[in-house]
Every structure is written in structure tokens, then in C-alpha cells.
Length: 379
Image (cartoon, rainbow, N blue to C red; front, top):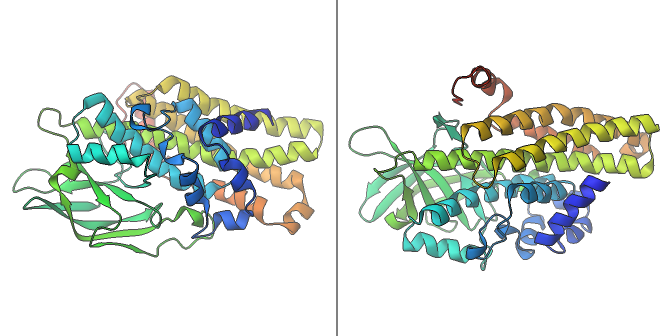
């Protein structure tokens, strides 16, 4: 299928050989806990997709990143669910380093080691903010000599078993005033950091989305990014940009799974010409909408309009996915369903897009206010 082949070509340019190796692994092996997909992602340079070239990465733009996720999602929904967290995290961190140059020497050293050492960053960020957090940071930081003691948990936390670092949005509580939003960079082997079972569904189990718990984890001051008195909204704006990245990448990944089903329908010539064409048109319309968002937001998607665009695209794709996957399974037929569970599992996994925040119900009123000319305030 032309659109999926084009996405594969983009993915191959950034991660040569990754798709071929994934394809050689049975679907069930790709999706199980402790499977090989995260290691293959590292081996094929996946960590550096959005990292700027001056830090050793690929510096991919939104459109190429979207197509890469589409291609990977056609083979492993667990992989795209996991690495979307890494990608949107590094997009924010490197924006701080490149655009502002305000990171400490220790923080810059970490960023320069990320690609050579293929460090994978799990996300404990509050997931998006326009005026206020969608999810208030669940990790608090208590000031002590030389740094902070972190306590709290993130669940689910993708990449929990494979992460090199946990990047956690934290609330620093001082003697007075409101808690300050900050970002802590925590090594995966830090004393007091532990991983506990949480994910109970076989679908997306390869994303390693268990609980990461912090109990008085010490983080030095120079590994905590604070907004600063001169620009108190700095981290808010970066979270907004990261939110846009995440929504684009996770939606593209789930759409990739649907695209793989449609491709099977086309290659096997299942159903009538009219049925196959209608299915392909709905898939291509969803992809075109996402591509339009990627082209519109540019390399720094941190404004309110970008948030609105990506949410419109995400919910439209979310609406289309059940129709596309159900019709694909129907046209592929009963024998396909009987012989292997891979296609049914891929279809079911795509429904997880509905569970990523913000849910449709939570975003409905804020979007209506925005469409009517007001600010977009997600809570």
C-alpha cells in the first residue's frame, strides 16, 4: 500500500534494518512483556529520532517522525506506545538545551550521552498543560542539602523495565506559596526507585507500563530543571509542546496498526472493489488529517492552536479506528480470525487510543469554548 510503503521508507532512512528485524519476530513475541522490541529499538538508533543533530541525533521533523511511528505501529503497537513517551520527553529536554542554553553542565552531559549510550528515557511528566495541568505531578520534592528527596509514583509508566532515566515532573514544596513545577532527571538505578507490577492486560504488554515508585530518592540540584523567577511559565510552555508531540506520535502509532490490516485486505483482494476502496479512503483520510497537523505545527509546536489542531485530529482518528479495524477483520474473513490472533489483537490494541488523556469527555467543553473564541484550558 502506497502510504504505508512511503512510511516504511522514512523509517528505514532513520532506523535501517529495524522493520525487517521486527517483522521476523512472531507477533505474540513482539507484544509480550520482556520481549526484544525495546532492545531492537536501541540497536537501530531509535533513541535519537527527535534529538538534534548537534547532540548526535537525527533531528527528525514532525512529518518524518509521524511516518516513522506509522511504520513501527504497523508491526508493534507496544513499541510505539512505549517509545512515544521517550520521544516527547527528549523533544522537551533538547528544546531547553538548544533554544535556551540554560541547562547545567551535568544536564548537558546527560543529553550528550543519550545517543552514544542509547539512553532510553521513561516519562513521569505531567501529561500536558495549557494554563493548568491535565495531570497534577504525583511526585513531590523535599529540599535537602545538595538537592531534593523525591517521593511518589507514576503508574502506568511505559519503559519501566528498560529505562535508563526517569524524567519526572515534580512539585517542589517550599516554606510558603504554591508548589513549584520542576523536572527531575533520575537514573533508573537510583536508590529508592523501584518498579512494581501494574499492567494486567495482554494487549500492549510489551510497552512495559508498570508502576515506578520513588521513596526518598535523592536527586542533586544540578539534575533538577526549574522554571526560574525570570520565566515562570518556561516549563508550562515546554509541557504544552511535549503534549502536542505525544498526541501526534501516539495517534500515528495506533493508526499504523489499522493501516497494516487495510494493507492485508488490499493485498488479498478481500471483498468487492467498492468495499476495498471505501476502506482505503477512510484510512487515507485519517492519515491526511494527521499529516496536516504535522505540517502546520512546525518544529516547535507549543501554542494553543497546535494543541487544538492535534486534539481534533486525535479524536477524529479515534472515531475512525474502530470502523477501519472492524471492517478489515470482517473482510479478511473467519479463517484469518481462526488461524491466528495477531490481526484481532492489533485491532483491539488500537482501541487504547481512547484511554490516553485527555479523554473526549474531559476535552469537550474546553474545545467548545476554544471553537467559540475563548482560551483552551485543559484540566
